[in-house]
Image 1: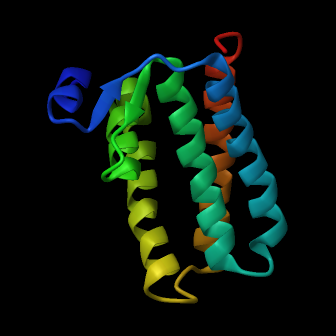
Image 2: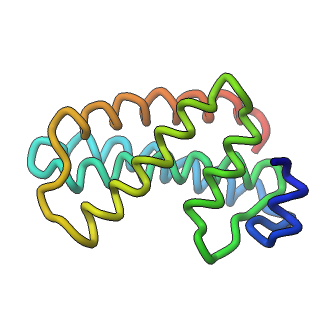
Length: 143
C-alpha cells in the first residue's frame, strides 16, 4: 500500500497544515508521556491509554508535517496505516504493535475495566517513549 491508496480510499487527505499545529501535536505527545508516567502506578488502564495517546499524537505530528491528515472515520486506524507506509520496513513491527495496542486500548476504555496488566502498561510506555523521541528528532527543525 502507498500514500496514493490511502488518499484514493479517503483514509487520509492532503492538507496544508501550519507548523504551529505540528508543534502542538508533538507537545501533546510529550505531555501525555509525562501524564502516563504519573498515573501509571494508580491505574494501569488509564496509564496505558495515555501512553497510547502519546504515540497517536506523535504520529499525527509526523503526518501533519508531511501535509496529511487522517479522515475522521477510523482516524486512529488510518493514522497507523499512514505511519506504517511512512516509516517503512524498519518500523513495521513497531507500528503493528501500536495498532494492536489501539485495539487493546479500546477494550480497556470501553469494555473491560482492569484489562491492562502492569507489564503491558510498562511495555507500552517504554515503546511510546522511544517512539515519541524518534518522531521528535525526525521532525526537529521542520516545524
